[in-house]
Length: 312
Ligand SMILES: Cc1cc2nc3c(=O)[nH]c(=O)nc-3n(C[C@H](O)[C@H](O)[C@H](O)COP(=O)(O)OP(=O)(O)OC[C@H]3O[C@@H](n4cnc5c(N)ncnc54)[C@H](O)[C@@H]3O)c2cc1C
Image (cartoon, rainbow, N blue to C red):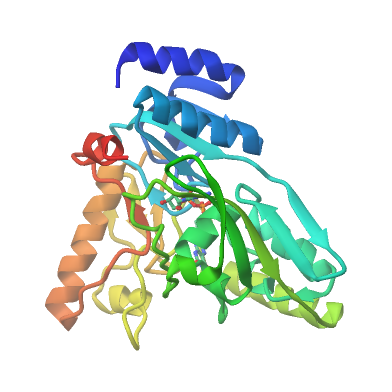
């Protein structure tokens, strides 16, 4: 990957590409150093073209959605970082199916489906991020999850082909699909959800209930949501609180007083601060309760950045 190939690809992509842009500006938690080459893809053609150009030029690349689940390194990311802003959504009234581009904002889609009285995604009315990120993570809340209503997805394979796959292909588990591992070169281009006609008033009441529960339990401010997965039969937040770690600060980051599984960037927090809190929690919860908490968020380690991206 040379400076020259980055410059050539940036020139071909024109206004969609920018050099050395701080990713903190786009990340949910406001943390992350510069992307060597940032591409904001507002349409499907730009998304696919950027990936194919990067591949041809031997430039490491990676696609993100809303960056609401990623802890990005302070030193930034090499290669091409593509932010997927392909927002198109079709609502097929005849079949009650929603066909969404992968950069569509999942909360807006869920709100519109709920307004129409289409049940199956109401749990997602307050879920940050994009459809693509939600599929990759098998996002879920309030008993719902992506795997329950996804019926098909278009993927872009490493050889540049668009392929339609069924949900089984993703090998979904709790907050996991096989695309969650960072060494894959497959991206989700669109997703189709099959919903069910329900009473719109009942769905609206559910949506209000879920929004209220988020407002009551989740702290405002810059976070990545739940930092750790819940271990079997318990809650990460309960364990962190019981370990006496609520309110602990490291640099500009703190463990929320309101919900111990949420870590907040108070303004000038860094990935190193956030990581220090993760390490502290893992050590203390293991020491006190014998339970190893596993991150729900995805972390790009500083030392692994160039290797990780170069492997793509
Ligand atoms: C306040 C708050 C509350 C939250 N509540 C919940 C919750 O209730 N339930 C829950 O499950 N999560 C929750 N989250 C976490 C997060 O919102 C979800 O995981 C979300 O689905 C991530 O989407 P994203 O677009 O931001 O993904 P990103 O953070 O941008 O990316 C996540 C991963 O997906 C990959 N990816 C993204 N788009 C694509 C694509 N099109 N093709 C291939 N790979 C792709 C990225 O490379 C990365 O590996 C919460 C987060 C916050 C900040």
